[in-house]
Image (cartoon, rainbow, N blue to C red; front, side, top):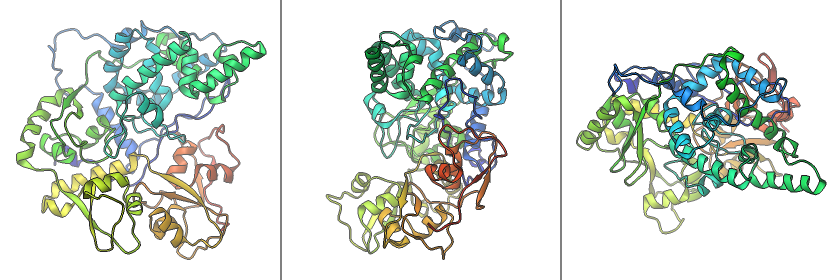
Length: 530
């Protein structure tokens, strides 16, 4: 069977929380990733990156020619790293060194991108430590999504992302596109460095906390006659723990013997290649035609929101460098072999509105208007509408391979990509039916999201978690308590168990500074109706 069909069914997932606040001298937290399990799509992506990090294919250059290593080239550009004994930075260097399995996983995710990132760092004459910033931000997870709605390996908020040239729409989120986000992040860091007169520590603090907050803190200290070093400012504890993380990583990589740490032997050569597309391409059809591994294709193109690339010309598809020619050949033949499948059609039901249908199916109102050539928002019962980007599987007939691969891709994306999550406080006179209608979801979905039985009553004041970005599957665990595992964070548990982050903290007397311990038991649901 083709590699694209080797991906197991994926039923549930989690997201990393790369912004866990820390103290000035924090006790290092558990790493923000879960150990792999067959039902974890993040584990599937990690496995894909592990495969991509192997030299599975013959390199395109002369195999006998000597190949340099990436780390010496990067480390010679280090300018920031300084870890005096008993400093917070030294603590972080020790912590990263004492968690080699975590670092192996993170660097495996980083390997496809490192050659490109180091080239960019070098071309801009920037400190080499900046190449390690995605380790701090997201553990180099392109699908990372923080509780503050920052996304991607460089953890951009949508406003800043657009300010620095990243596109975000129904088809594509440039914050998750590692190559595009790297360009934007380095542009932003250069801007911040200029804003703070060449002080990289202040620039990094501003990258984390916001330039306005750092400048206000500096003005406050200046008025009080206090110092203006980053660690002397009144900044969030998260930020005061953020800068030492990157500095500690730099110390670790520069002085591996001191910390008894072994860097992986990464060759300094391209591991990916970009292919400019002449039009919209069906990823499922391409994976089948070129015999590409579907999980690897998703992992290398994490900015895509659907099974299709964005409409129009110019999307930059990323593939393993060794498979680029095979992919180009498949692309040339693709229109003859299999055209992109049609859009799925739905029928408007009584009470439906365009906004409700958009929320329910995870698309924007504008996309629905465009797909159906609507001038306004009015729809009528019985009307047929096309859902952009979704395949009508009946349109591909008996092509079982395509149908199976499409379902696998959609299951993977539904779990990896962020959803719209709301916490609704039940008002007087509200029923589940009214709440479901307001958010465009089913009553049964709300019950599954909140671990409610069919006969559970709701009372005014109760908080309900509402997700509108995708169909909701039952949680991994339905018990009232959850046992913390290695790598869990409050955010991953919140997402996996479908309970609001604030509610999870309230039930367990925790806050965002709390450090979870493996084996710790958390109350997920109180069992109360109010």
